[in-house]
Length: 437
Image (cartoon, rainbow, N blue to C red; front, side, top):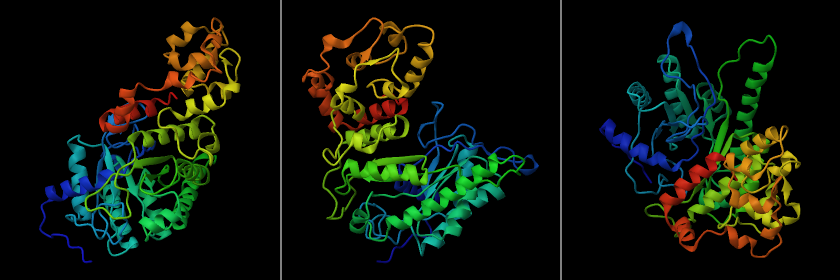
């Protein structure tokens, strides 16, 4: 199939098409980088205060990136992608100079704080990667842009080009899309899981080298390179269970040191392939995966404790930490004044920050329920699982079969969680950002 792009399309029309086409990519990660003074004191922008596109930075600020595709024309025919080769959508394409001009204009008008750039594959992976790199190079070298740049890597591109892209970006990402090669072979036949992980491994080596050079005493300042990488996995596009998805995420965190794995619920697209499901997964499934991901990264949980072969999918009614606690009641109640940090992190309702505050405070006094209230701990959730100086949870019946029912949402709220995207989305952002599980 021949894909044509109108040559005389207005810049505003291109922007509308290519910004809308980029909305399906969730892997906008904060940079944590700082490109300060350029040579000669010139410079535009700053990466101070890492950012996420239309979301929250680690310091709580809501900031914006220009999130756009270089082109939505693509040689690949991934069934879940609206920009696939066989899709009947209007095509558009920026030149590198047009995209550089847009980025600088938007930044100077205070609309954005950086650029998130991805692209469909045109001519070849290497050719497309060269165009993406040219945009970043012009911004950094010709216009001395010091704002945030996130580049989407193409795993089929040569290692030399992927490495070159990392020199201009604060953060890079390579989308793994699906957790198994079986799923990719069915829905994205041009993609290969081993090749994607090989590209991730190459980036990890270069990132590790950069940080090693920074730590070496007396060493010269290493050349700029991306501070980390992230990826995205689709949820519900194939029959992969939550256990399979989390095992793949665990491998990516452990073997490739990814900063973040993003989970994106599959959304039906116009003129869908017959291989795709007719309905999207419930929004709460994506939310539960983020909660489970948080437990793997910050709470010391293993995948098999959260989702096993015996129970491969997460409970949609209760968060995974609470589900684990209900399955392992013999570990509770935990004494807030004596229990180790590892045990306290497994108490439902206690987040990492509050556990650290508890450990600090109990050095000077025996903690009571009033102290937990002052820490804004969700009391209804923690009471059956904690002992304090003035509370022992015997009357709540930790062994009672009805304990689970106490935590179930009301029927009306459960219906909203499953069928109302705005309600589920707002709740997800608040709970996942706070880390209080």
